Length: 278
Image 1 (spheres, rainbow, N blue to C red):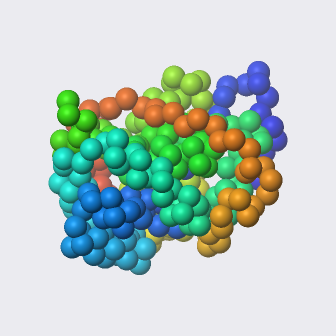
Image 2 (cartoon, rainbow, N blue to C red):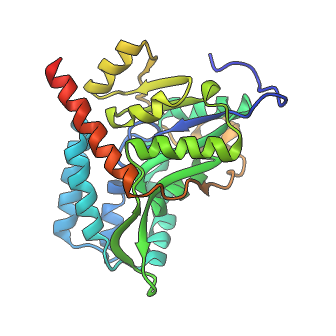
């Protein structure tokens, strides 16, 4: 139960959604591999490598080491890309690539949270150039995403300005709560990955969605609800509610700095060590 419509005299609340394998059935970044190839940004070898990465991601999710390798690979791959061209490619192919892989169950949850008066926030490790348009498509109120450094020439430098991953997601959620007046004890969060435990623990109503094995164990130990989403559907085939103009998605959460990124690595290493000892 999501509860009744929010009483406006009470503190505001929000629902925080991870994106990949939580709201959509694939990796948002890797899904655009073929489009980037057709736009001349990557070669055929890179297309094959992103296709393989997508397969690995779908087969078993991605642990910390795999996420780090993917981050390094994608950062190097996009070095020199013109940001405006990337945005145009995403805009041109968004509906064809993303619309068919949105989980019906997730779309319904987003509708229900909006009906209850809660903001909907997408919190994703994928890049802002991909996540922001998807957030608009979904009608999200806010977006938190990884941001790459852009040079004076309008191209990616290959450096990461802000990495939305692990504890940095929780930092962003807390920063949003402070700026927007959210009562985190009454907020909701949804994710499929063990690396998002800090975000899930930061709210009063955490949910595991299509969880990897480690998150399933964590959710079971804490009696968190476990949801299974398995019905991708085009938004236009759903209820008329999704025919309304989307809400503007805003990039939230300023960079929390290298210390938070380091904290993410320390957190994950310690968690793996605890699991091994258990």
